[in-house]
Each structure stands twice: as C-alpha cells, then as structure tokens.
Amino acid sequence: MKRTATTLAALFAALSAFAQHDGYVTGSIESNSIQYAKDEATGAVLPEDRFGSNNYAKVDAFWGNFSAGFQIEGYMPVLQGFSPYLEGIALTSKYAAYNADGWSVRLGNFYGQFGSGLLFRSWEDRDLGFNNSLEGIDIAYNWNGAVSVRAICGRPRFGMEVKDVWVRGADANLSVAQLLGMQAFDIDLGASYVDRYEEGGWSPDARLNVGGYSARAGLGWNGLSLKGEYVTRASNETSEDAQGAQAILAELGYSGHGLGITATFRKMSNMVFGMSRDSADGMYEIINYTPALSQQYTYTLTTLNPYSSHPINEIGGQVDVSYNFRRGTLLGGKRGMKIHANYSQWHGPSNAYTGEGDSILYFRDASIDIDKSFSSKLKLKALYSFQSYNPALKAPNHLGEEMWNSHIVVFDILYKFDKKQSLRTEIQHLATKKNIIEGDSYNRFRSNWLSGLLEYNIAPAWSIYIQDSWNYGNDEQRLHYYNGGFSYSRSNVRADLSYGRYMEGYICSGGVCRTIPAYTGANLKFTFIF
Image (cartoon, rainbow, N blue to C red; front, top):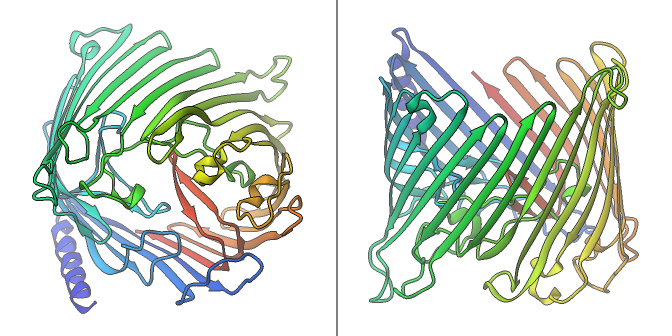
C-alpha cells in the first residue's frame, strides 16, 4: 500500500510538471461501495466482510502532440459478483503517447479493436468489472482517411496483473471511395491478423502460437449499406488437428426519410479466444468480443432473462426497424412520434457448453415500442416484448423443458411541472405460464411480476426515486424487491445513495452480461471529474 501510494504521488507530480508549459491535466475519481445487510428472505449469501468497494482514479496529461497518463484501482474488497482476481490496490495502467502527421505511437497500456471485434478487442467496462488492456506498444498510421494501418504487441491484463502471454497483431483498412474521390459510394475494405504466443504447456504437442485472420468489406450508397466480415482462427487446444474457430457476420441497412432498417446475421463456432490455452474464467479471460445481437433493454422486467451469446456454437440474427412520423401527419400529430420494432432469434446445439447435440432454439424476442410527446409537459414511452428463453441455457438439467415464454408490457410516463421539476413513472408487468417446481431456484423466472417506479427530479441537481418489483406469481416465495434513493449531480460531481433488496440477475453492457448475486444493502456511488 505504501509503495503504491508513493508511486502514485510520483506519477502525479511528473504529469503535473509535464503539463505545466502550455499543457493541461484531466482526470476522474470513481467509487462504488456497498454495505451488505442480512436478509434471510432472499436466500442471499452474506459475505464475511459486509462491506465492498470498487474504486478507480485516472489522470491524463496533454502537451502539444504528447500525452501520458495512469490509472490506479482499489478493491477493498471487491464487490460481490465481480471477478475474485480483482483485489487490493495497484497501479493497473500507465502510458505515454505521441500523435502527429497521421502517426500515433503509444507505449504502455492501450485498448483497441480490429473490425467488429470477433478476432480481437481490448476494452474496459467498469460495470462489468472487465479490463483486458494490453501492456506493450501500439503504432498506427492514417493517410488522409483513405488508408490506415496499425500494429500492436503486448501482454493482456488479467485481474490486477498481466498474463505471461504475448498478443501480436496488425490491421489495415482501405477506403476506396476516399482514395478515388468518389462522392456517391462508400467502399471500404479491411483485413486483420492476430497471434497469441504462450511458452511451454503440459503437453509436448502444446500449440505455442494461436493465430487468426479476418477479412471485411463494406458498401454504402444512397442510404443503403452492406457490411460483411469473415473470421478464422486456429484452435485454442493443443492438438494440431483440433477444430478451429470460424465466424461469419453480415449486416444490411437502410437509413433515410425517417426510416431506419438494420438486419444482422451471425454464425460462429469455437470463437472464444482465451488469453491462454487454459483460460477458464469465462468473460474475464478473453481477448475478443462476441456480444449478444438482440435488443438491449434498460427496464427491470425486460432484463430478467437477457440473451448472452454462445460463441462455442451459435447461429441467428436480428432485424431492427424504426420510423419517425413527422409533425403534422395523422400519427405524428403536433409533435411527431417515433415507433421502433426489433426481432431476434438464436439457435445452437442442445448442450450450449460443449457445442454438442441437435440444434435447438435458444432465444427469441419480438418487441415494439413507441415514443410520443403529447405536449410540452407530457411524454410517453410504451413497450411490449414477447420473449422465449430456453431454460437449458441456465442449467443443462433443464434441457427438454418448455420454453420460458414471457409477455412484458412497460409504460414510462414523464410529466414536467415546470422547467425544473418533473415526475417520471414506470409501470411494468411480466406475464408467463405458471410452472412452479418445488424447490427450484429458478421459479422466479416462471411466474408473474409487477414492477413500478416513481422518480422526482429537480433540475439540475437532484433526483429522488422509489421502486418495487413484486414476484406475485410465485406461491413459494412472493417477495418484494424494493429500493429507493437519491442522486446529486452538479458541475463535475455526482453522488448516488440508495438502499434496497436486489434480486439475482444480470447486468449487461454492449450485449455482454455479468451475473449479479442477490443482496440487500446500502449503495453509495461517487464520481468526480477534473
């Protein structure tokens, strides 16, 4: 602890001196802490230390074409549901960079993505507790927006340290339209290569290098767009004849005259690209990105059974359509109206964990929502979603059971009393076929729910809310998952304080989901930006 504090002070002093001459320093401090309370009704496991806290401090300095920075993280201890490899206090990121004349050179920790990320993506998401930055060198060159190339080499972060593994790669993009000065068309081509090198291994046949390639193309014309990507990679396994990885991603879209349509298809097998050949900690030990391509919701009852991708073997896609009815039209009225619909469907083998078995339906979701302002004071969002979720995705022993079908309705109403005060109300209901099995921990997913929220806002600083979700269809355990709190936001400071009972479930970001355990307690979030 003392050594980390000394290093932090030295780095901060160095960056401050670095930016004194026509430069500037920016940064942020973020803290998320929970005091856990005993609550036998939920069956939640109370941690030995009833307090958890995830903390981040980030500083960046800029001077001309140069920049440098660092990030320090402290888990005292880590919150429940996050990786157990996040512990203690450590300097987890530091870098120095130079950008000029189309060149970009960065030493230290860096993030990046090749194509859609199916082959390689290095990124951070604090809500998920995920950070797989590479520690090494990142060099890129861009010529007039027409040609760009990038080369990387580094070791991936896992927990508070880095893996003794080297990830090397290169990416190139060519904008044919920009190069030839074409105005009507957009034509883009790209290719990537990534190699993971790991010494030794328990087997003499251990694969030291695991390499992969991707090729992609995009075409745009008059609001139409067509994109495609193909990825192939050697197997993570040791045997030379082990099955490799493949993925196909295709997207067709149109945007214009108030209409937006996107259709996406993806097929992939063995697409988990682990940091090492024995990677076994799920989402925390990967160097590629396989998000769920389905509607991403924010309402409580729509996220009880979110779909998470199954890169071992999966095929499916989604269609997303939106239309803006202009003001003065029959449906648009005086203020216009937006309507949006989404349909997604995914299939895979009956054993989603081994990739073996007959093809079955994993997930289906059909939804429609409208966004309508009736006056300067009243605004309504209404949503309906029909979701079919295969219980075998939660546990293999549920294979062969009926799909969990849910009808979900949400009304989100905002009323503005004046320029400063407003009241937002959420009313949600989930109806499903009652199928309670005695003693089954998943019964809450097979019964009806009712949820409501009241949120009172006083601009620009205060927000106060209360919320309750009631599992009234579960005869075994009819529980109220209540919570309430307030937030204060002013200038560069934001603080949120809440208390409540939270069900076991998921938190999702960008189509990637993390399981969160049930708990009851007080939560304090604090953010300061400078």
